[in-house]
Amino acid sequence: MKISVRYFASLREALGAGERAEVGEGATVAELRDHLLRLSEPHARVLSRERAVRCAVNQRMCAEDEALADGAEVAFFPPVTGG
Image 1 (tube, rainbow, N blue to C red):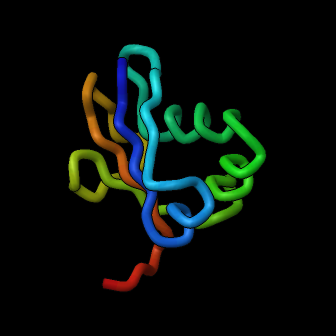
Image 2 (image 1 turned 180 degrees about the vertical axis):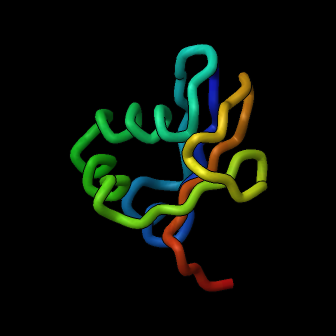
């Protein structure tokens, strides 16, 4: 499945505005995050499991066990962001 990934606040500063990712059918946000962690050292640092990172699928806040559908937009951001 092809997923659009967007980053906000400090994650955007480190990784850019976003990217496209491919994950297997039935993947969850957690599996997408694990995939992204393996892409590069900056990804591993910014999306580390030891850092608090919030997520949303198609502009709706969700937990990492949320299942993804082809074409979904997943956003990652720190727990506190400014407007």
